[in-house]
Amino acid sequence: MPALANFLLSCITITLAQAPAEPANRNLHFRESFENTDLLDRGFYDGKGRFTLDDDAAEGKKSLRYRFEAGQILPADSEGVRRKFEPVESVYVSFRMKLSSNWKWTGRPYGPHFIYFMTNENGRFHGPAASRLTVYVEPVNGRLRLAAQDIQNKDAPNGLTQGPLKGGYNGKFYDSEEILFDDGKWHFVEAVFRLNTLDETADKPNRDGIARGWVDGKLVVDRTDVIFRSTDFPKMKFDQFLMAPYFHHGVPHEQTLLIDDLAVGTDRPESISSR
Image 1 (cartoon, rainbow, N blue to C red):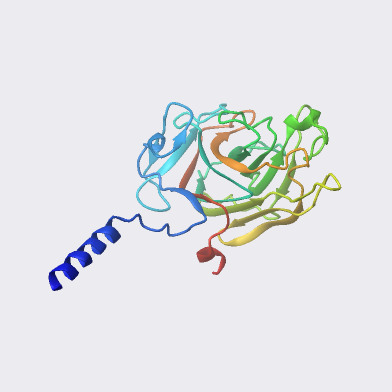
Image 2: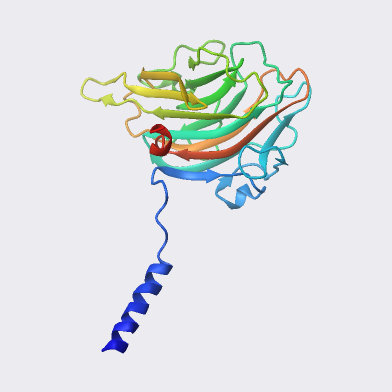
């Protein structure tokens, strides 16, 4: 009997050792530290996998570098990239971001674009600029901006939810009051988007969508009255992350954006929100 007991115990021990570990955060879809350039081997896709790392890092030893040459709208050394995840009503993103000390803005009330989320109402490679819904997290003229557009819905039965088209584009913008990105330092950026609910009986959206943003732990954008979708899209959910810096009209001179410690999930982790 002792031998049998020892055998059974060893089997249990082996089984437990081989069982997959529980994720530290069940709300987390993925995390990326940018310690090497093998992003396409880790679930990211699109482009040819051209990435450049920088020795200036917020966490670990490396960060991902996007260097813009004078007059260019796209970075010269790293490409944009996407990643899919299971469809969800709410998305959370956090990342460390640093703009070079000589960083200059467009001077216009839009751009540069940087972080995007799209939904299952568009395909795997659909462009973010004219979709059923694209939401944005971006630094605009030194402020944090959360934004949304739904240009593709101009002919939908209930029409556009993100304002009328102006010059072929539309959008709703939610900006921080303070200028936050003007010091050439690393900053910790977070954002949450939650789709509004729908009153399908009355055929109208409820004004209860959420757009919240934090910089270095401080809540700087807080909207709980947003309409992101209409009853035309009752099954709409977020299912795609994009990171694709785009500087409208080209940068005035060479300048660099660094990103590190990226995380995407469904909600703000308790370990952060309880601080």
